[in-house]
Image 1 (cartoon, rainbow, N blue to C red):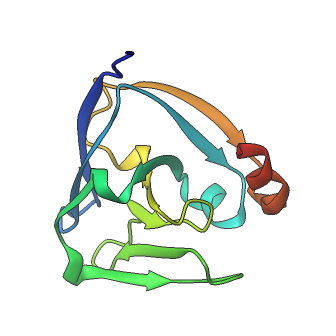
Image 2 (image 1 turned 180 degrees about the vertical axis):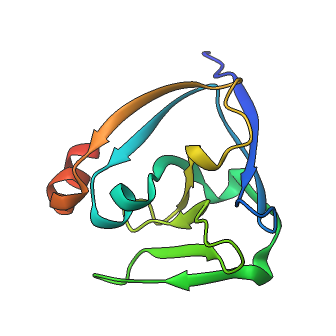
Image 3 (image 1 turned 30 degrees about the vertical axis):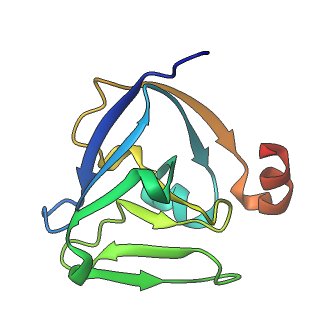
Length: 128
């Protein structure tokens, strides 16, 4: 049986009002998306199952934004405006954590994969 080494990561928004932790494999692939919102905000997607993610503080300061199909729920800190994680439409059973919102990535081995969010349906199909 192969054991996948896991690490606990932590992160949050710029002002510190929103904080989270998650348990993830030590070796992760993040998606670098070129869609309109990700390219403007520098969001790099680390997909984390709902069960492995813990919101430690800040639920009361999160504000929601939806666009396009409305399936994704973008969650921003209403104090500083940073989106440190959100509910993506591509993975409805997971959160998408912004690697750029992590406190430290020293424990992670990160590989980046391009995701053509401007052609979302084809890019999503290619993930399967």
